Length: 193
Image 1: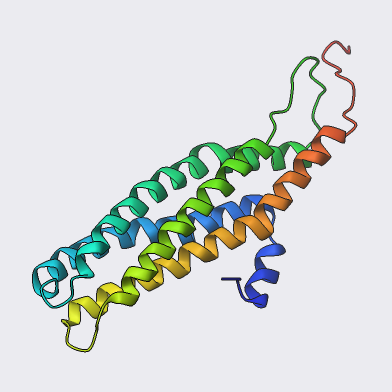
Image 2 (image 1 turned 180 degrees about the vertical axis):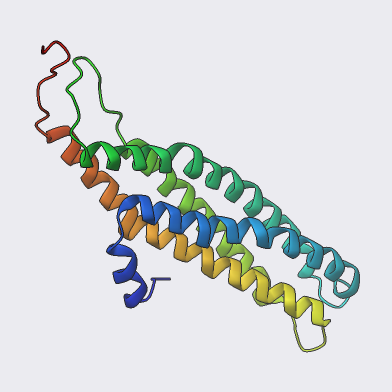
């Protein structure tokens, strides 16, 4: 799922710190806030609809797996990757004194790890989508309809999150790192009188 052109242009115009903020507010918090409702509705649906719809029983496994992996992933982004990207942007935008022997950490390793986790999450979401496709909604409870809408919204939101990172944030962050490594920093003047 690619993000629409207008959203892509709007987000591409942002600095990386603002993109990180957008991802946290629009996507990470959305997922965190939706998970409890999904599991409340899932519990109700398991009681009401699982007899008529055996596929309902398979939802829990995929949803729990996705929630666990997504929550860990989002914490890594918020506490490790995004702060590093923000710091990199601040450093490139400031005049920084040269520090001999201090190496700039590489961002391509964490970005590769995030992409690998995204592929795993997409696989889980594909499995979830297949399970949802097995559910007969012709004679089901209104709660099941709500749950399926929530799963669809979660999936769309998460895939948009992935696309923003892959298409916009990660390339910008890698470019910042490249610029940082090639930036000619002024000599230290700590000892100037």
